[in-house]
Image 1: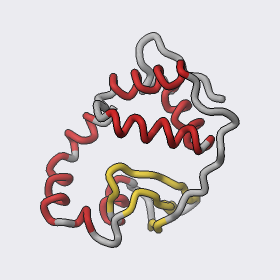
Image 2: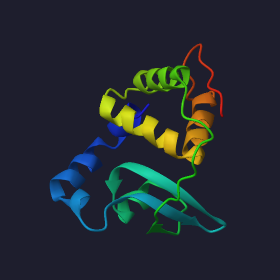
Image 3: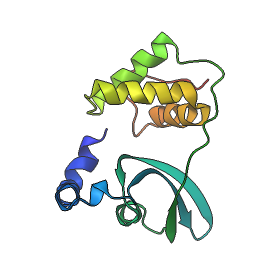
Image 4: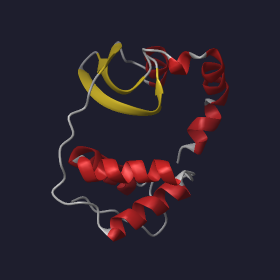
Length: 136
């Protein structure tokens, strides 16, 4: 899932890490990105600065740091959902179990994040063979 993006931007990522840009006060994970006709919230991993964020969002006219307000889910992820999410992430190239655990925990805390992730999992472009996720 992340491997094509990482490969495509490898040189920029390495340059940012080597320059120390990834460790400054203006490096964050949660952003509100402003487009001419709308705003949208996004979360990045790893944390990035506004310059890097805007490079990933063509057409954006600005961005500001935001603190998302999590919306509690009606119920935690089921064992089947956890298994499906883990398999989907691993098929996409995510191998860090700590990252997967943090994502599961966030889904258990934040219904909006959970629903967005499960919509993404159901998107034909990102779908794993033989798997359909269900929103709760």
